[in-house]
Image (cartoon, rainbow, N blue to C red):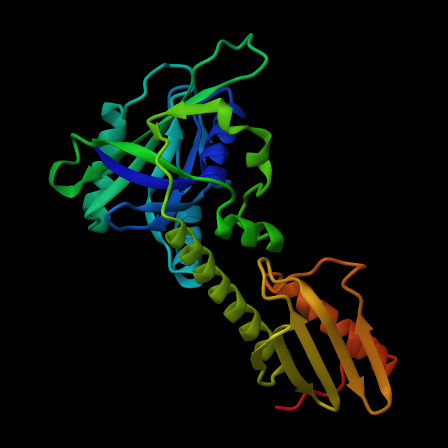
Length: 310
């Protein structure tokens, strides 16, 4: 049996969304193909989707938008989608499901597509509701007869979800809803095999590098100056010269790279950011920009930025 890996947070996100509706619902799966593909993000349906007790219709405009964001920002691919069969007890793709996936493969030239099917397996009267999730892969060569997948669970939170949660990314998602459902509420073809530790670490490092590059790009775009990036024994240091103001930032070198210190200096005027008053990480580009703007305003005793060098 083929295996696919999914983070615990994403499997719980599927279960939580399934249990939130008295109808079918669903979402999209983003990750990386490989000999054993990995899912880093399981979304909920887009805002223009439709749900009923017998089917759900995906918001294709939303899918295009989020697929572009995942590819451009994070280097991830659309692997497929998931949807629930509510309380029907059907754990495999229906004829309608198979035909839809077949059209998706043909229209987009995909070599393969994944689909997860979620069902609610407890009576409505039960206080704690439980779900089953089964995964299938639809190869292009025989998409009408998909293969059942063994689901490997990566413990903890997907590094991508963690970053997007810190940013409160505007992608029509509730980034923390997955926490409303425990792992005990999800069953199915879930294996107990543990993922390679070095692989999990490499995933986190890869997302961290991209997130740091996002921050550098936003700082340089916002303030129209280059950022000097250096790694020291005490953390990761950024320095910038914004007009007549010298900016020094230091981030911890441990996930999720919180601010250790920020200082703005102009002449004899100095202003510093107190990280004990607010937790801000390198992943929160908008907040880091806001901190720098605030410090510049303080050293110049104004709410307006000084003229920027171009």
